[in-house]
Image 1 (spheres, rainbow, N blue to C red):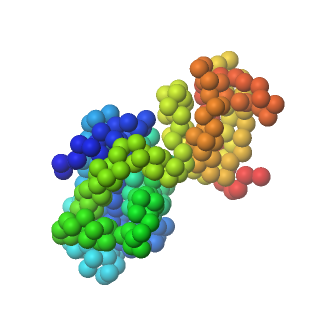
Image 2 (cartoon, rainbow, N blue to C red):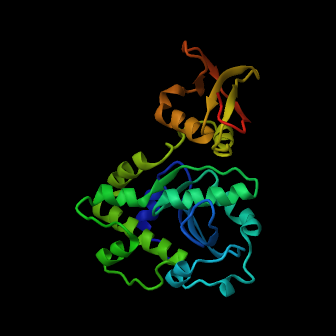
Length: 282
């Protein structure tokens, strides 16, 4: 896919890789239905990776989805299962900002698929529907069909994952062209949930945080002397930790000092460990 240069240059300014993503599923239930197609563009420091794949599953495709997408079970024969395809996509998704239309659905569906493989996956997400409403409040409809009509682009291939990614890329590019890169990023970043980690966070700590599950647990922060500097209880570990650091970048100084106690004492946080809990933490 030819990616518009203005959008690519804009995304390059963000401190993390970006994934523009679309999924097709057997139905509309994020916990019970399964992914049948994945398409994404991965932007990392000027490099763009394009990936599209049908996914085989034992869950029947609903007649509505089959009619909408044109994907039937015969088409999936010979395609990899999510378990088989997972090693290809996980390195692209982990540590990236995901942008998707109706992002919560795609993200939750992905999390459900990874969890079935005993892999905990969490990432910051921005919903382009919310971005569209923010930029164009005068419009009542913000689905991709309405967007295609407003852009005056052909609607052929809609409801196939890569076609929808291509349409979303065109739409984001039109926003950047109309409002400018700075305005686009200023509108996008407040929509990221949870907030992006601070740029000056040590890379090893970023990697640890982006690898955290988003369930119940207790986070233990260790300083440079391997002493416990902070202990926090979480219901949603990744979301709460990333949100805390993203909302309060002042917690970090030149030497990456983390506020370890309520009285404001500081220590260098060099490692984080999460002790998971099966039930809600008390």
